[in-house]
View (cartoon, rainbow, N blue to C red):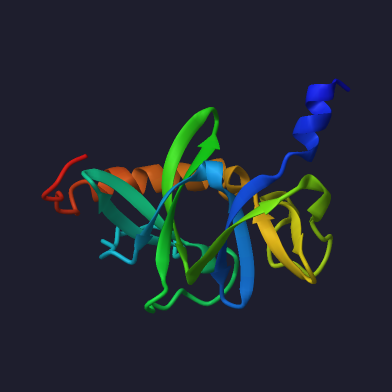
Amino acid sequence: MTIENVQNANTPVQYLAFKLGDEVYAVDVAKVREILDFPPITKVPRTPEFMRGVINLRGSVVPVVDMRLKFGMPMTERSVNTCIVVVEAQLDNELTTIGALADSVQEVIELAPSNIEPPPRIGSRLKVEFLKGMGKIGENFLMILDIDKVFSSSEITMVKEAANAGKDLVEPDNYKD
């Protein structure tokens, strides 16, 4: 192992922490494009239940996924803290922009690899391959998602098809980048 590899292995990574129900999850900030208040979502017919619809993000159609439904929880209810975390997931060497519905965004935290435990084998709603690990902050844990593995290739295809179908359903914004 080179000195550079050792330094990279000990370099803290920043994660965006967010809540789904009473559980705290996190995603690498390098995967996060932006965080939005809860905008109007246009439902797309014949999509899976966890696909809540699409939004118009400065002229681009972005599919919105209810992460609570995806992980077997009750549907996300709109509140003052409900938001959409816009992430870029990589699948089959292609970046796909997805809006992930969250109950609230908590904070950006830095975790050194030494503060990340392997994912649990039991007691988690998530399939272990969705998780990079469990981040430890004091006595509390948060589940670090591997956003590239949360969705299967067939689900990503459905998300892309929903975005394409949604282009005819959403109205263009009045502003551009």
